[in-house]
Image 1 (cartoon, rainbow, N blue to C red):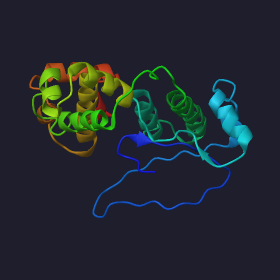
Image 2 (cartoon, rainbow, N blue to C red):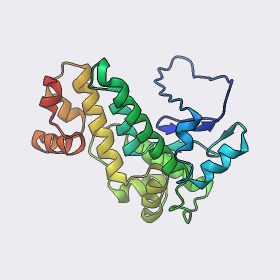
Image 3 (spheres, rainbow, N blue to C red):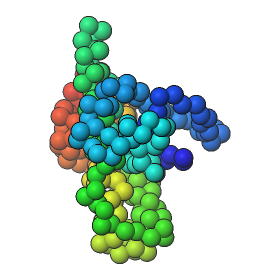
Image 4 (cartoon, rainbow, N blue to C red):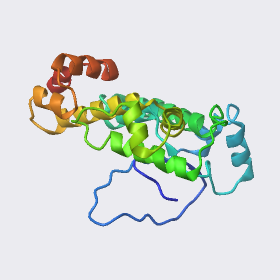
Length: 227
């Protein structure tokens, strides 16, 4: 199973052994959660597919192919990794958050709302190439839908449908989220001035940047730095 950046996979098993291969000279960050069967079984009534897997008592992937993390799942992971509580309350917080993440993951795996979407392998490649182009240099002005569709040779409707199907977000929503994630990382890991980070995240006006940042994270860049 080949898992790309921004994807996840889920496996049901009692015991599992395997090997993981990485490309040389690359840096990776991997996030894993292991659930006890009893906890997962609590949600089996809501997901018929999961109930079938549990009763089969075999090792099996919950989805045939890796799935894309949506924004809610990314937020859940970040909240777990950036736990604001001390040791006394951390376990309770983790318990709530890993349950939340499991619900979000299963909702994506067993969601059938996009069942009518059908993309050929060529169309799928163009959709992924469009996302790569869109996020290549976040400091530069964004592609328009028209220019992006022309760049990859796919009509605008199929391009927008493809983003919703594969990435669970619109084209510009994906771009804005990537810009904000980059800005947050720079705020936490560098001493660059907020005005410079604003430009690196593709926002020529700092007021627009602060408004967008607060809308996504619930606090301003300055508040994050002070924390």
